[in-house]
Image (tube, rainbow, N blue to C red; front, side, top):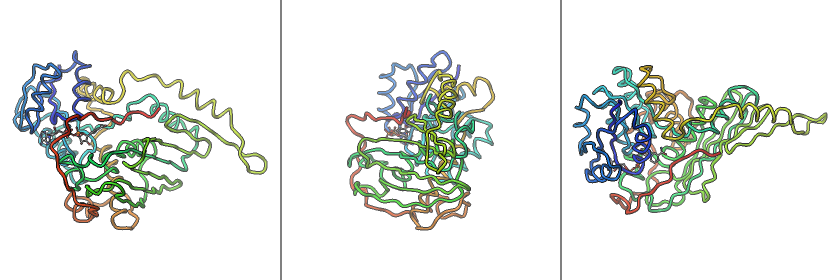
Length: 384
Ligand SMILES: NC(=O)c1ccc[n+]([C@@H]2O[C@H](COP(=O)([O-])OP(=O)(O)OC[C@H]3O[C@@H](n4cnc5c(N)ncnc54)[C@H](O)[C@@H]3O)[C@@H](O)[C@H]2O)c1
């Protein structure tokens, strides 16, 4: 039986606690922790758990019987809590974004390697049936080399969203929609297409003059023989999100759509019905996942602990890649100059202090509330 602690009993902790409860024959929640200890206590009662509650996470890390820690706190705390948990010999699942700087990611990965423990970064959208089909198709080469990707990470958040105490500052949230919302799509892009060589970007805060950070960014990524574009936004009504890959031979996308053209004698397009059918056939052979979203990722980590392999789908190195891409977007948008990858440690944006010194503060954060009376959130899920 794997014994688990959940640190940070706010909105997203529900997805972790519910998933662990699904696997109650494999794991047991032994501790809940929040700096507002009443939130941990309320969680314990709401989920009818017979576990201990803590205000200081360091105390629960001293317990030898806890094997795995879910870090569900704000971004600026992820590195400190994860590193301390790993040093105490715990496996760690950390919520997205992995951290608020690459320097922190590197410390987290070093701590995991030194402890020989698992560090997994939440990217629940990788655990979905449609993205599994998309990955199989792209890996098969049926669509040919990818020449263009279009990532629309469109979200909408009202003005008061940034009033929550830790949101809306470079120091505590670590960034705006590019880091905290588009992280899901940027992670999927780098998983499916790899890392670009160069990044160009612009960003702005168009509608939230109560936040230092951006609410809209547009980035262009250069690959050796391809371009990609990422729009990260919390100002898009309807939140219509998509991830479109244009291969030399076919287009495949989330939401799922396949089209393919061949050339007529004069170079104009005609539909390649055979290829469309072949791609849809391959996609239909991909077996349905037993668990999706947070359940899927937590199952992956529990399985790796049970098997003693330590092999998880989303490692700390994978989380770092996604953060490197986001950091490059911030650097390019802040300086107005294109950024080549990999980002070296002497990049001005490598540390959190460097980001805070060099990123634009669009507006001053004016209001800070401890919480909202109804804190229901929508969690990024699969676009089918
Ligand atoms: N995967 C997803 O789709 C998804 C969705 C929402 C949020 N998140 C991420 O989850 C994290 C938390 O977001 P949230 O919306 O749940 O925020 P939240 O404010 O609702 O909850 C965070 C909780 O952490 C507590 N906390 C802060 N510092 C702490 C510390 N040092 N020790 C213990 N508890 C501490 C806070 O009191 C709060 O209760 C963020 O990194 C966010 O980006 C992920």
